[in-house]
Amino acid sequence: MGGFARLVEAAPRYAALLRSQYWKPDQLAAYRAKQLEKTFRAAARIPFYADRFGAAPQAVDLTQLPILKRIDVEAVSRSVASIYPPDARFVGERSSGTSGPAVKFLFDSSHQAGRNAARIRYLRMTGWNPLQRGAWFAGQRLLAAPDPDYQAIGELIRWFAFVGVKFFPTATPFTEQVDILERTQSLSVYGFPSGIDGILHVLEDTGRRLPLLRRALCGGEAVDDSMRERARRLFGFDVSDNYGSTEAFIAFQCPAGSYHINAEHVLVEVVDDTGREVVSGQMGRVLVTTLENFLMPLVRYEIGDYAVAARGECSCGRTLPRLSRILGRQANLFRRPDGGLVSGWPAVGTLREFPELKFFQLVQKSFVSFCVRYVADRALTPERENHIRETLREDGLWEAAEVAFEQMSDIPRASSGKFMVTLCEVPR
View 1 (cartoon, rainbow, N blue to C red):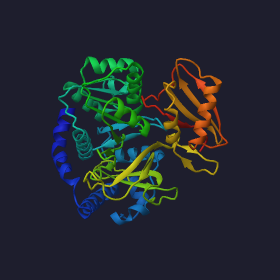
View 2 (cartoon, rainbow, N blue to C red; view 1 turned 30 degrees about the vertical axis):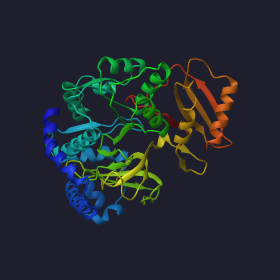
View 3 (cartoon, helix red, strand yellow; view 1 turned 30 degrees about the horizontal axis):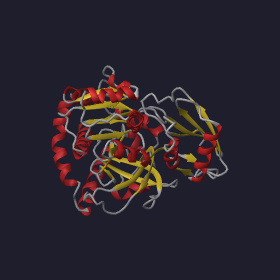
View 4 (cartoon, one colour; view 1 turned 45 degrees about the vertical axis):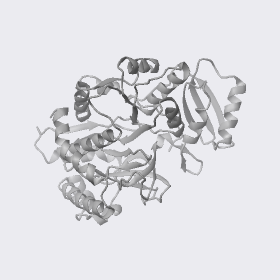
């Protein structure tokens, strides 16, 4: 099924999502309980889950079920294939492998319709129109010839590229990205946050402007507050983020700043190290249970991300559950000597205050040593290095930490095109 057909298939779901995002909490809870029961019935047909759960679980049993790890996914996939004829063909995608082994996920039409409808809800909320001119920067592998590991997203890319959107490699130098936006007279730009940040650097350094640009959308990496502030100053509007993954389209950011979970599509838990749900404002591991994939359901799947939980209503009026912040992978969080994790985003905001750091990555080498890898026109002087060290320490980085500097001509990205602005190399 092609990208256009998938969008047509998603249209009724999209219309339903426009209503359900304003449902009363009890109405949403009843819908999710019904979808969860259907998910459990689908899981019971798969030998992997039948052995794992034993007696058929009910919706109220969810938080008592074991957590599904990434290492288990291939076993689930093989178990699904075992109940179909050997020549059966499935729609699937392989994870990027940015933070661990790449694994294959299988999808049915109901999951794809729900995911695409949720994507459309997010895009249309921002004012995006596929018929309008736009430039999207994506990983090279997605833009290459059709790849069996990226069937679903590849179909949508080929469809969007047929209308107003033009796709370009995310590895395109940032000055050329600005040239592309000017040449194509784009009204919208979509890319990784690090890519949007690179475009902002070019505008800041050259004084160039993009007067036709009306919206900037991003996803795939965590967004820090300092980048948002610069976007408001240089673009004249805020950046709109979304939280998607190979497994599902998890959440989207509304104009009020909340990350609303696509609760009709997935159920999300934010839990501590014991698997218990954390309180509002606390950081925890993200667990995902799919509610529309009855071919290969994921039940309490630890996706590998960390987020900050949120409770209460959003001023935008949407009643969907919320996350207040997406922090990224465990590899993006710094580790304390006691084993606790802490976000490096305050330090990133501090480093962005130094304009000579055109591009940088903050790496934790040990519990008490860090390295700032950076791209700049010239090496930092010892005096400037000391100034940055003191500023980092004052801003919350461990007072006793050693901070080294390493100038580089380029800082490599992952094979997916994603960039890790914070990276922990301390063994788990």
